[in-house]
Length: 458
Image (cartoon, rainbow, N blue to C red; front, side, top):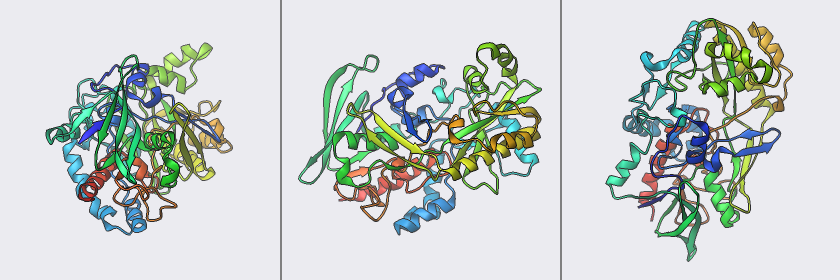
């Protein structure tokens, strides 16, 4: 087995967003979907992929979601009961455990406490960070290897079983011979300059695309293969989100402690997942609009900020295409119902923060201002349109979805494309629907299920 990876072989971690974007984010962190709003979408790269720079949250998909997949695919191997042992296996391999108090940090502790006082499910979150010391730098890459990203866990296992890894090489073409996939062509480049250094061709009886829900359809569209494979790139889901920040009397320093180490759910808001907001100080200042003449006031507030991201399992959809030079062309339209659920999630998040002791709250919404009560905040949100919100997404999925009908899906329940034998897809793009939780663990468990099927395929 040979793995081609566009990003660098060695982790190039620095506690700096620009550095992370350059080395460990697809297209330099500059992908933006246009539609009825502007939506930045992040995706990782490097040996270890998105696990290098994610927040390490390791939720299992809701059982109702997995069971709906199994029903649609007419395949019980995708049911919650059948996937549970795979979740167990992967969780053990990557060290998933509930975040512990000693490194959680004040922001996570406040969210957990506020949710508990309101009787809401949640608390400190499951994360694959067995060596966590609470430095809050997961999104820049763990500097102490305390996060069990796949470059430290699953890929070494593959290496021990004979896999070869070719980094700094972007796959640009699926080779097709005799009506079936026969290999991949890649372009190797210098990791710092981007200079072309050579072509790599790999011939194989089975070709697996795992470039993510943006990278996989982008490659197929740029090559010109997408139209023959069905609805490649359609049906994009992204888990869009906004955030609510609170101002506490105590010093919180929300960038210290476990990255996104707490969460809660609300029984009246299925598919809405508030979880801790973590960002460096400069991003926090921007989030509350503390620029120009307001900077001094923002600096005074900065140590006292706490807050949550409010993420929704979206019904809105988008699409992925490729530009002439091979970059992603993204569109996404936010549904009104999703916006209303986002607002309601923000209101319940404000309630949790006030219960935890904050004095004021603010949303990352144009000119919304600070509010002293849940009721005031809710009223301010009520008439806001989608383009008032500063939205963000980092969970692209469903662009080469599994299904039974080649006209409405790209791959079957084994991950093989309906219309090109020998070509498989094994990433979040195969998800039939939006997931509703951070997808890391489901991508790994689903990949394990697909790997079993691929190994058995003729």
